[in-house]
Image 1: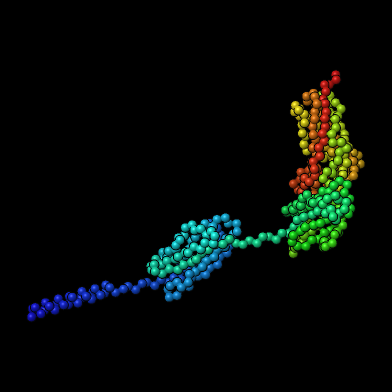
Image 2: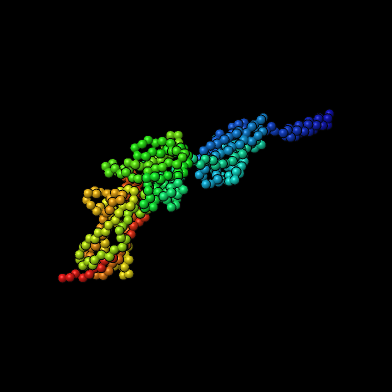
Length: 400
C-alpha cells in the first residue's frame, strides 16, 4: 500500500512538470501598434524653406504597410545646396523612431530618393516608409519687355554713308522715362530720317511733340528729329518718344539724336602771347555748336594734362561761354560761343607751359540740353566725345 502511494505521487509530479514545460513553449502574441499614429503631416528641412510639397501617405492594411508613402519637396531655384536634413517630426518619439534621424544630413543631388523609415519601438516588426525626393522650382524666365535696338540703316537713309546704331539704350529705374541715344555725323539732315527699331514684348507706339501716342506703322516712318527747345519749360517741343505697351505695363523711351562732337573749336591748338610772372591774362577762342541741342554757358573744362617735359604743372583755367550777352544762358545749335582761357602766372616758375585742356560735355536727359552738371535728380549721360584744346604759354620775368 505504501509503495502504491509513492508511485502515484511520482506520476503526478511528472505530469505537472510536463504541463509546465508545454506552457513555456506557447508562442507569445505580438502587440499590434496603430501605424497611422506614425504618419508624417509635413517634411520641413533645417537648411531651406520649401515652396511646395506633395505628400502621398503609406497605405496600411491590417497593421502592415502595403505601399510606401512618397514625398516630393520643391525648394527655391536660388538654393545652392541640396545636402539637407529633416528638421522635426510630428509623431510621438517615445513610441516611434525615424531613420535617417532628425538632423542627419542627406544628399538629394541629382534627383536622389532617400527612404525614411518610421519604426514602432513597441513592435519593431511594424514600420512604414516614405520615399523622399527634392527638386528646385522651375522659374520661368521673365518675358522681355523693352526696346533692344535702334538704328538708321544706310539703305533707308541715303544721306548717310553707313548704318548708324544707337550708342546707348538706357532704362532709369523708378521713373517712367527711359532714353535712346544715337549720334550721327556732323551735317546730317535731321529732318527726314527713317529709324529701324527692335523690341521684345507688347506693342510699339510713338508720339512726337504734344501729340498723342499712336501705333507705330509697319511701313517706314519718316521722322524730323530736329530739336525745338523751349527755354521757359526746359524741354524739347519736338521730342520723339517711343512706347512699349503690354497689358497694364508701359515703358516710354525718349529718342535723342545728336552728333558725336557738338562743340567744334575754330582752333584745337593755340600759343598765347607771353605772360609776365605775377600777371593774370584772359584769351578768347571761338567755337560753334554743331549739335542738335542747346549747350549751357559756363561749361567748365574737366581736366588739365601737363605736357611739359619738366612737369611745371598747370597755370590755366578754361570754360565755354556765350559770345554775346543777348544769347542768354545757352549757345543754340548753329550759334557761336567763346572759349575763355585764363592764364594765372602768379607765383609760378618762369618758362614754357604746355597743357591739354579737356572738355567733357554731357547730355541732361530730363532738361534736353548739354552741360557738365553732375545731378543725382536728373539722368546725365556721358555720350559725347571729349574735346581737347592744347594751349602753350611762356611765362617771362616781369619787366620792372
